[in-house]
Image (spheres, rainbow, N blue to C red):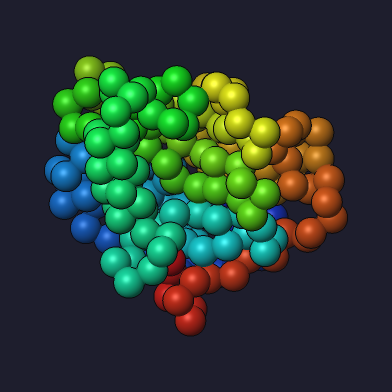
Length: 178
């Protein structure tokens, strides 16, 4: 339902990207949200010249797995005792609990799932604004959160609709998803 709303909001034609989700989820050790997978297969790119949706493309800086691997390696060697510099959570490591990033904005907002290997179907969102802090938790789907960011000017502090950027979408990598 929410993925369809994002499609209608942007007027985008689904890309139909083929992704080996089994391999990605095997590396993570948990399943990804079904609506994220559908969003990625449909989009994979930049919304309103401001919101970056992490996808799957090893050659691009907005690669979902590459960003997670880097965050995990930095977090593991940070000397912070397993606590990430991002809020008070560690970056998710297979079999544990922690953050997995899936998006950001040009204003330095960051979007994560709070992942717990013992609760594999549960994907609450932790959104952290440019001002930092622990972040705000949202118990909603990835696609609902993304829709609210794009369309709800009152979705503070994360809604970008208040900036009148429109709802255009641009695929990354020359038409291929990011």
